[in-house]
Amino acid sequence: MSLHGKRKEIYKYEAPWTVYAMNWSVRPDKRFRLALGSFVEEYNNKVQLVGLDEESSEFICRNTFDHPYPTTKLMWIPDTKGVYPDLLATSGDYLRVWRVGETETRLECLLNNNKNSDFCAPLTSFDWNEVDPYLLGTSSIDTTCTIWGLETGQVLGRVNLVSGHVKTQLIAHDKEVYDIAFSRAGGGRDMFASVGADGSVRMFDLRHLEHSTIIYEDPQHHPLLRLCWNKQDPNYLATMAMDGMEVVILDVRVPCTPVARLNNHRACVNGIAWAPHSSCHICTAGNYGGGWEGREGEVFLWSL
Image 1 (cartoon, rainbow, N blue to C red):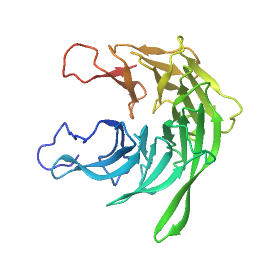
Image 2: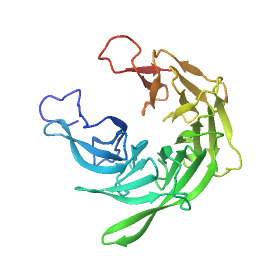
Image 3: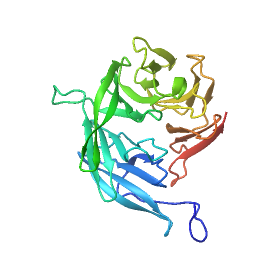
Image 4: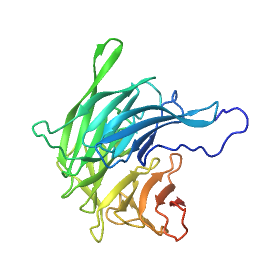
């Protein structure tokens, strides 16, 4: 980080509300940019775009826009070369894709697969395909996963309009689906996995959707909330159960048999992230299980 004078080691930003969702931008021309989603228990919520001012070494709010209900997840387009439109996606009642400009953010398209009803099944999560950024996958409480295709349509003024359509929808689990993530295996475009309230991890191939593979089932059938693929070795993934104090490491080549259980947490785990540069390092985060007031949580770095 090329900052003037002595470089800070800790950068802090205080949002005006409880932060529920967060994601880093990976565009090379938009360094140190975050999107933050609010958690306010009412219809009107917010998304903030926060960037680092390298002159003052402070994070500042660049833009704020309204969002219906809290965002269950938000993601910047996985564009590491800066060749696609500057897009941000959010999930909640629907999947929304936003175009980010220098001074404002506007809704580009709202993706709704249930146009025949006034009601919608809330989306619990989604993932943006890193190999093909025109593909997104959503998970829903209605037991389904939906794969969406984005399209760059006609030019209006000097801007290419972005729209979306359903490529496929499938019943993924017996109960609510809580997370979905694309795998880098097989070229990185067609494989994805999901977890849900039935306590299972299931893997799918867009080229052969007539069947799926159960990778793991929780012994007590506790709901599984999140999954995360290893960024360097697509054979490995991590998952965690609702209110669970451990993270389960799985090898897709050996289904239903965990290769490791990371269980040093003293309270429930609520976050997992594999290292971007290493196949054997993972970070887990959870509530603080001790009695020391003022401690907000615990983060562990593991070498497997």
